[in-house]
Image (cartoon, rainbow, N blue to C red):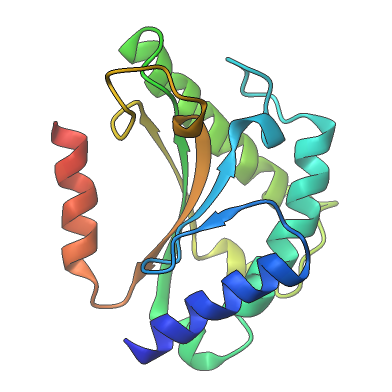
Length: 169
């Protein structure tokens, strides 16, 4: 638990120190990137600005995670989740969210993408589409349209189950 708190604090500090425009959940370490940074509305093609953002963010993010053996051991997976608002068709939103998560993953996997210890990072990544599962169903909110980098920590089954429960609603 202490390792998790220290890791999350370091991610928050690095985002602030490097003026990286993300929201970091202080409890979970989830890093939320607004859709407008990465994609045009209803598109799964990374914008040039989105690629630049990832080229800055991912090396900073991964450097922290892989900087200490206790961080590396604690973080079993990093789930790149695409999310949409409740606007539109459920099936189309699910597909769009998955395509966006895959676009981020493909960018990271690209041969020209530079990050220290890339093979170690890649073995932790998984892409998932969440559609509008966690969106505000009462209104169309741009805050719901995002890509989330979510940690799965070793031994953190309660959090994993709560994420699954949300998807059943």
